[in-house]
Length: 152
Image 1 (tube, one colour):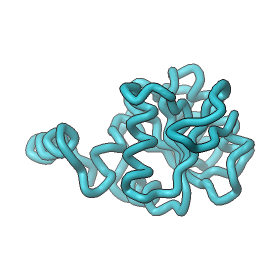
Image 2 (cartoon, helix red, strand yellow; image 1 turned 120 degrees about the vertical axis):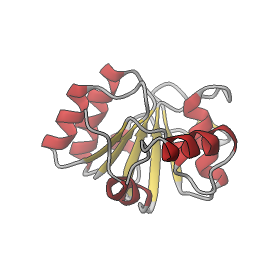
Image 3 (cartoon, helix red, strand yellow; image 1 turned 90 degrees about the horizontal axis):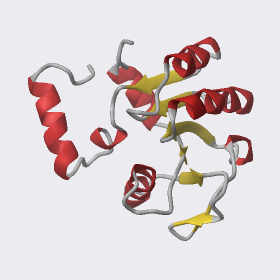
Image 4 (cartoon, one colour; image 1 turned 135 degrees about the horizontal axis):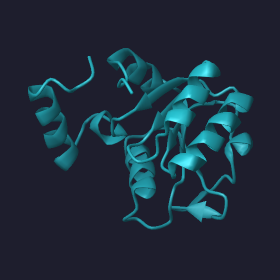
């Protein structure tokens, strides 16, 4: 699967509002880390999890269809089989961008998104693109740039 271009990544990041699908109440889980990092960077971001009432003090949405209309970009932090179902929900909701975190992507989900006209970022960690990039992710980004694997 070819990786996303910098243009696709930048289009994703220019959204007015985001949702993290598969957010967790556990601060050690990646869905929670992504959610908190985006909030710290002052993004408008909504948590989505079918069985949580709240995350980090914010009301949690049960599914994609319950999200506010201003959400046009979602990040999936769920198993690949769930990602495919999320893509279908996103298409029905009119969401234009999906970022499939490593471990969340599936060929079926990517193909479904492309058929629906949804741009997809996969094979990249969003934390390497949320400026300013900190700690391990800054080092990882540096290494990817040195070896020529950073999106252009």
